[in-house]
Image (cartoon, rainbow, N blue to C red; front, top):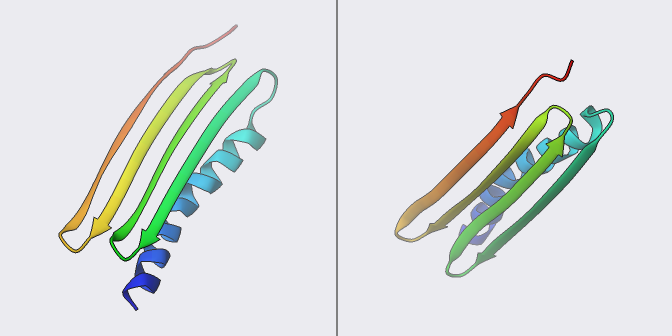
Length: 89
């Protein structure tokens, strides 16, 4: 049962990342470059998810990375995000 809960927790955390990357890729016009990578793990020691995403477009640049880990001692995680936008015209 604990393994099922961990898998569901990892899925719930990873879904927004996947949907966000899909939205960025489809919403831009013109110059656009995106990179995203995610990993997850669920085993007898705990469950975790991590991801990174970067994008460059004619409107600006953005980078985010994060991780979340859960085990018998609790939950830990971190998030970093940065970016810049500008107006052309």
